[in-house]
Length: 264
Image (cartoon, rainbow, N blue to C red; front, side, top):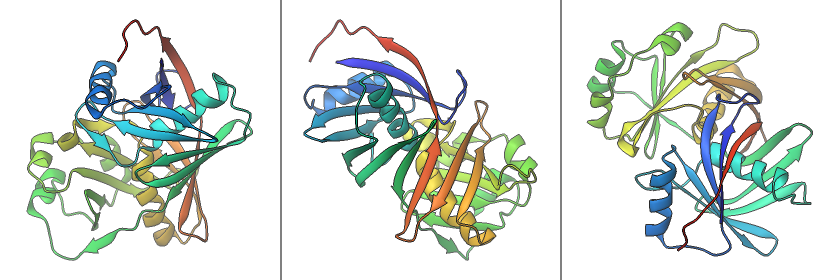
């Protein structure tokens, strides 16, 4: 097997979101996937197995498998295009979230992902208000996700989270977001997931499936640019299509290739 680390959603080393990418000749057991993910010890490690003209793709955190991961998918495509010299301009992955496609477009990669759909909550949430130290403009949810709209971009950027409060909340991933005051970004965000072993994720492709839908509705725009204001930071470009899909565009930097002396 070949094991890489890749910084995704950036064109600068040590920025964006680092992911592990493990290229396999055959599928492994869930136990082995988890062992490797724990050894790599990044927020997600992608495991790729060729299947004819397509690829099987799964993602694991050091604690468990996840159904969708944007930055590790982007990192995987970068390795397949640049290191394995895949001739096709479009890669197709079979995943737990259905068929995902990544296209090489000039200097960036474009992912075709399902558009997230959020439901607004009308009632207040004591834990979340205590977490924010204010009442959010809106609370929007789907499955394990919770997106909180704040009034001010600076609050998002300067916010100091209390992760112990989030661990007591029933939603596993909490996103805070606000409209950007910068003309080159439409909105800013940060993503917290202590319940899944990630206190703060640097740049989160799956979160932006929800953020694209949320801000497209508020701003009446189908093409947007989001900035995830973590310490590492990252930019995601979006375009919402007519068939309830979102095109996420970004670049990656390949940071390392590891020599594997062990086998399964």
